[in-house]
Image (tube, rainbow, N blue to C red; front, side):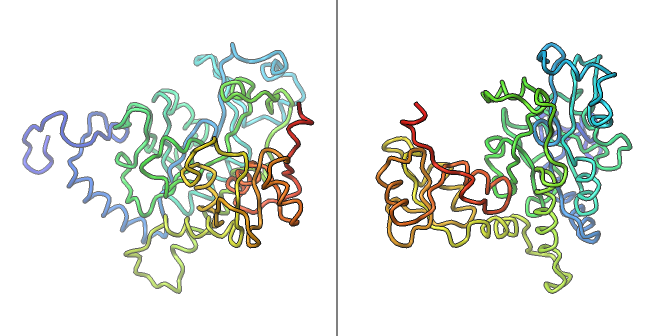
Length: 359
């Protein structure tokens, strides 16, 4: 029904915002009006928008039936580790599921809520999304009704900001899956996946034991959420820099995120060797594009200005050149680690191994 004249509208017109109110659909001009009004209110409170994925970003879940023998202790209330896990591990019999919250998540949400209006956005079903939101935010002080689930998406297998009542220029996104945000990569901070359970490792093809099987976990102080909180604080600080005045028109959080990201490998010149498939257009590869987003310069040929050769084989011509010329020779994980940790990593921790020796 039109809010102005009361006339019944076509049920398929506009964009559905069912997570706010059942059957609510808004026309584009009304969405634009609400976004503009909401942004002005938010900026007065010195806040931006933050969209958060659930699985592998803020938590990890598994079915009871997928728990391995080494994970049996998770179901034993008398196990000594239960005291350590208290408040972060939840057994949900009605869902036949157990969920583990990521270390530092409570502090992360509390501190981020001072700087951002936060949304949950998951590809999971609504019932699951609401249950996870309740575990993360039992007092409903962080998200309220801002929980977007699979059924709210307007495009299959894709997430979009069209169902978020926030201006794109003021939105930051945390997600472990870059591909689902194909239209909003400039807003995205890619998270290192949280694999607490064995089923999660299996799902993504990791052969190593999971954190739960090792009776271990991420670091609270140096883990992914603690790292990314500092990035969020920095972008927020740049956006609301007092020296820029109180007029926020024209400011764009995406540009500021890009500036922070481009400082990570500033001054590095990279050549890749034995990393891309033969005849692959190098500058279209995700690692090449990742390196450039981190501020590095990439080249297909070596010269004296090259600082790093990224390789998977110590025996290639370019790898041997790097050793001879005393340049850094590192495996691709060095680049990925810098991307996730928002800091240039020590090169000696990522040596290139000899493929022949490994065989």
